[in-house]
Amino acid sequence: MKRATVLNKLAIDWDVVARCRELAREITNPIQRYIDAHSTVSIERAVLRAYGIEDAYEGMPLVNLIVDSLPKEALSRGISYWFGRALVATQMEPEELAFAIASGKVSFDKLPHVPFSAIRRRIMPLAKRAISKIEAARRRREHLIEKYGQSEKYPLKYLIVATGNIYEDVEQAKAAVLAGADIIAVIRHTAQSLLDYVPHGITTEGFGGTYATQANFRIMRKALDELGKKVGRYIRLTNYASGLCMSEIAIMGAYENLDILLNDAMYGILFRDINMKRTFIDQFFSRMIMARAGMIINTGEDNYLTTADAYEKAHTVIVSQFINERLALNAGLAPEQIGLGHAFEMNPKIEDGFLYELAQAELVRELFPKSPVKYMPPTKYMTGDIFFGNVQDAMFNMVGIMTNQSIQLLGIPTEAIHNPFLQDRHFALKNANYIFNNARHLSEEIMFVPNGKIVRRARQVLSEVLKTLEKVKRDGLMKSIEKGVFADVSRGENDGRGLSGVFEKGRDYFNPIEDMLR
Image (cartoon, rainbow, N blue to C red; front, top):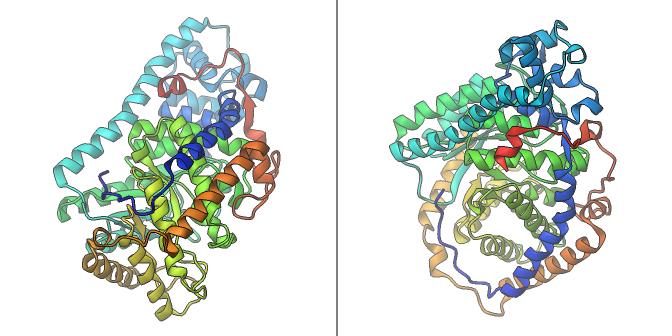
């Protein structure tokens, strides 16, 4: 994903930046050691999905029924060991075996002894095929971009669809693309992130969004590819890999050729009360899949400013970005795949708020020059006044073009009223198209006063970033989350949903998918 050139306008102290990155490494080292020693039920289910187990039995995904049939002590060897042992013992094919386990015809605790060498011989072809499918997603995307081209004008225009019905989502997505959208994001059904399973099949009823299922991914991808061929540019597809099924959705997204997944190291902890240990482990495995598939992650720092003040807590956004970047690099993502998040959430009543927002956006852009940063529109101070909302969105779009943002999630004037209608997106695109076209090269024509408000604000924020990273290093990341450092939200180390799905890997833990991804 190519992007616009970033100019150094803020006279940043790069020694401070280097120290920030070193602190982020030191902060995440103990987290990474914990990750390396543990797995989760979602990771084991993702491994089964990688082996081709996609179906359901009596409404429940096969992968859940298989993993849940094992006690934690047994699961510590990895589902690949048990599933491979059952494949050898029964001589069944993977899907046939999956149904047999789900229906109770085959039980892990009644399997005969099988030499590990035989288990490995049986499971490795499945693992290699899975890695080949993941890598094929990258090649397919590159082929289609070469064949149809892509938008070279930044920021890329990102729009959401959220009808609850995948077929209606397709129609709304088509309308948005024809009006100029470059990226379509299918918003998930409200609170799907709290489900410890992935719903199966095509869905047409959802609240606040559409269920993220493999079948729904397939439908939207096919529709966008057909439309991309007609309009002469590749259209990127986004969904959500946050929540309790982060790892599974990553493998589903890779198999169905999604381009971007929302995947944050702390969003689920802070905003969905998902246990932090579970989240850290799952994000690592899911990001390894996405790294190999050539997908982009979007992190969730933009959400911090919906609960914390954008002026007072701007530094916490960048602290999180440094930490998210380090964890993503640990998982093998290239900087060009790490789409960090920030948002235009400055209180409109603050004098010179536009300048402070400009300083923040430019600072993020310069600190992470290779990152396809996703810039989010105003939401916190949208009141339902669509005329004032349109002005706020216009200011947001102006900052986006002035600071060379990569991905601009377009603001919609009916924010705070209802899910967007077709005409609402059309209106949002008219606003963005006008500003992006008329100010296309504005960023190349302006510099900032060396000691003016914008530069001083950026310097102040970066100083606070360094101090906060030093404090997080002293306290530890988990303890810092408990203290409410991020988003003014406090979560306990052993609190939240999903901790029961975490387990320590045994000395004989077997996961060839993870081994090959690493």
